[in-house]
Image 1 (cartoon, helix red, strand yellow):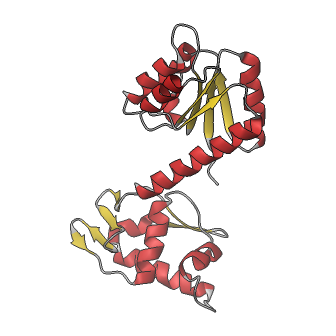
Image 2: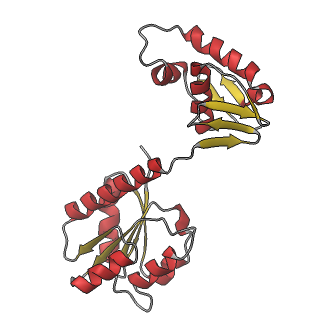
Image 3: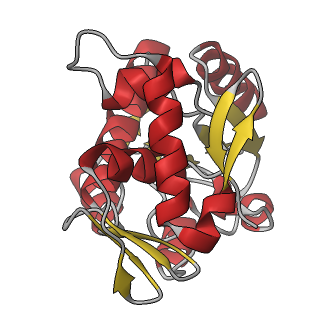
Length: 229
């Protein structure tokens, strides 16, 4: 499960701490800011969700959201507005600014948590739909749609299992997969497969992808990973 990062921006310090405590209990990594000005000085690009109070100091939550949506680096960060104002015009304004949800005070913490989960779930689905058609490492191109691998512009013929192993490793650069992990993911529908089968396929794969074969590294006692060289 991804460790989601959430930023709560509200000029009520007590409310920030309450939200932080309860969201952290749900497994989220949470930070707070007590004004839009303070929040805008932070590196916002690393957050998966912003909870913004509307009525704050000189820079309102609406103004902050407008600034974020104009910046390519932060334009896609989901926003939930939290406000004491509960009028149709304010709600429409929030959604027109690109808000993903709008919660009126007073609210229950269960409601906030449920809405946070719903927005993050939708975001995760959107990211999956925007998944790239190719994974590129230098001159190695793994075409996910066509199920082909090209090196220096030339196709490198791979078996189905070899392609799936390479795709798994390249997609998760630096992550070590045990033989059991690879078996479960790639040979999941087969009744009985020897660990040796993994080693044979890895050996063949290394030879076929030439100079990139050295990127498939063996971690003794752990498994295999793809490392940038």
